[in-house]
Image (cartoon, rainbow over all chains, first blue to last red; front, top):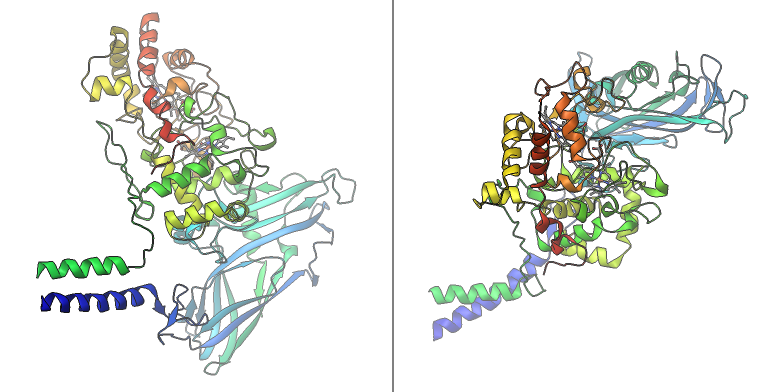
Amino acid sequence: MKTIFKTAAIAVIGGITLTMSSCKKEGCMDQSALNYNHDAEKDNGSCVYDEGNPVTLNVNHMFGGNAMSTDSVYSDDQGTKYKFTRCDFYLSNFTFMDMDMSMKGMTDTMFIVKMGTSSLNMGNVDLTGHVHMMNAKIGLDSLTTYTVDPSTMPAGHPLSLQVPSMYWSWSSGYIFFAVEGVYDSNGDQVIDGSDATFEMHLGMHQFAVDDAFTIHQDLEANEALTLNLNLDYSQLFTGMDLANDNTTHTMDNMPLANALKANLANFLSVN
Amino acid sequence: MNKHIWIIASFVFLFSCNKEEVKDDSFVLEQPEGFPAMQIPSDNQLTKSRVNLGKKLFFDKRLSEDSTVSCASCHLQPMGFADNFQISPGVHGNLGFRNTPTLTNIGYAEIFFMDGGVPTLELQVLNPIENPDEMNMPVPQAIERMAAIPEYQQMALEAYDRPFDAFVLTRAIAAYERTLVSGNSKFDQEVYQGKNVFSQSEQNGYQLFLDKGCADCHSGFNFTDNDFHNIGLYEIYTDIGRKRVTILDSDEGKFKTPTLRNVELTAPYMHDGSLASLEEVVDFLNTGGETHVNKSSLIQPLNLTVSEKADLVAFLKTLTDWDFVNNEKHGIYYTYE
């Protein structure tokens, strides 16, 4: 009898402690920490912080020597007038190289760059010493492209579902680069509601573009690295004839997709 | 000692976080005679609350731009979860370019869409919602709209222990679709359940189906090899089929082999709905098809007599499962408790 009473008492206490501990999830509650746990309700002092050099890219949207504007009317190589309405693309797989081309640092941070994006904050990457080059991919690596299910990504993540969409629901995979606009389809030299739209979407792993930029900077420990990422929209349609060939979703118009891909090499520069 | 463990166990149970009374949410998927177990992703095992939520979404027109079209507008149970349009209208009467396929046994499919562009049933859900010719809603907007409905929030928490989001939307609809199992047709009764129900004509038709190569592509319990073939429907395909997603010339005019279950109910036929009846399909196959470099060598002139053609059609009609088509559990008015 006595032992049963004792067991019951232990059970009550055990039950209560179990309830308390199992109901309040412990973890790191600081959002700036590497191991931030959004389910945590009690901070257990386990936060781990990222040491290193904060890297920021300031994004400049240019058309030749001037700022690019969605209000401006531009002309392609054949003289066809057009305006931009959208240009969204992924930038991912950032790596930083030393003079001898060995890898100094890398980050999993990725971005969707839009026409309104003014800066990209990469967080901290440990780059103390000489940084010779930065590599980046316009688009995503093939593993991400074909195996990530965007409906499993948390809202706000670049790989979650976007508006306008950066994912092909009919041929599962991410859209790397999307540029859209209106061109003077009726040849009246003005761009207005009577004109047709153009739409070029690149995807599929072979359309990712690997870019390399010379940085050539020496950094102290934890010193910030701030770079200018220049986008020159005048490069996008080089050699194209928008009046006659203006729409691709990659697989349905490979020649145009290839032409756009080739032009992307001159679209980005860093200084 | 055993007694003590029980006491402790019952206390832990009493004090555990789960405040609701424990109700049995497990879902037992029917597995008809002759069918293998369905492969179900570990993050989306079936439960009653998941299936109930998915069913509600499947029938909810609010997932479309102007709240006029639901999944069930094109995938209707009386027609084997297809419809009888050549091309089904979406919002504003917009027309796509393919005939609506059946969702019969869709949980057994290994790849989705006629060109195989989509690898999972969950990912497939995104397309009709976004497709301008179907429901025309960016998925994040559809989620915002549905998440504002308290009933959906509550069902999402119950089913997936998280607020209504893209994960819940895609998982729940896929969960419901996996319950659309059909395995009690006359064919099943004859072949898998060992009952003698085939007429002579149906029996002849079955033999022809096996002998004339149909079963090489329409193979196994679900009458599909989950592969892509060019059957010579056209000399020049306007819809290039699988090439649309692979860009390979060798895939031009290839389409996923459709299941033939409930095929009697899903007219018209082929990817573009160009053949109006099963008789027309059999007449076409009897010719051996048009010339095309990619045409399967299995498609050859069949030299069928008039009565053999009728037998083949009679056999195809034995694949109709009236229990499935009339099963109220698949309908919107039934809730799994």
